Length: 249
Image: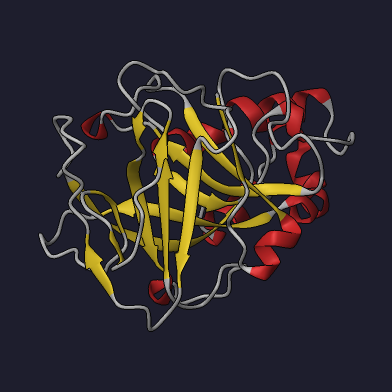
């Protein structure tokens, strides 16, 4: 949600939620909302979802046991005009071991691979001839908006900062108020519908990307599920994206 919406949420009188304003501010995390913008066919070198990635000349397209990874999205980091934990420049590119037969488990090691191509590295568009699924060339230009996030699942609350009614309200009503189920985002908290645990597992890990299902990309999870990417906090601080965990829910 944007900061203005957060200010509305913390003033809600129902179940005296406004009395927990300080607590909600204490658990708030920054996030980046990913918004699709089909305003131009020009997408080379820009942030986008789907289509063909821009990669270095010597890039080796990642492979798994059953075939090639699929390109999910890329972030041109120079397009982000506010402070984030990400490097300030370069291209961040996300690939997933997704295929129509679901051969690779969503939580498998290396289900996702993330690459940071540093500023100044010559990039070119890579059209992978091994990928021939129906929407392989479909591309959505994306914008990156500064947002904030709070937990919307009981499993993410480690203390008793909210009473039961307040917690139920925040987890069941507030997501609809902020259209939580309708977009992908970077950072913030993981969002899920089919898990009964905190997918971050330990405090050493944090959310990197929460990716909403989109049928035009032939992603093979259900429309009410999210693919969640996690990174170790110390590696994020170093700009090291070599070890990414995933979960689906």
